[in-house]
View: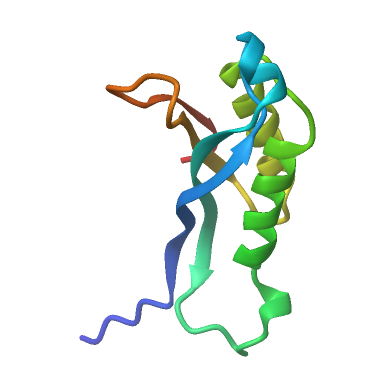
Length: 125
């Protein structure tokens, strides 16, 4: 008996995306940028193991996802990390074919001895 598996659960992952943003409630955070790191997982659900073609227009382009993350996090100053991660999560959930989103945003230099991060999970997992 031969088993023919033709589909699998697919997740698009971006890890360690670093860039500068204005984020925070302290006086210097309102005017100066600081480095943040974003990790994102997007649940794309069941996908064919062997797509019928090799066309970028038939998949969620990770270049687009990367740019959306940067644009959402740098569009304007946000006081709270919690507000920023909620805004980003909502935006990523709007992408075609995305069933669920897991996002982590870390402020890398707020303390000398640790990074501070918030993680959000929404949608189907």
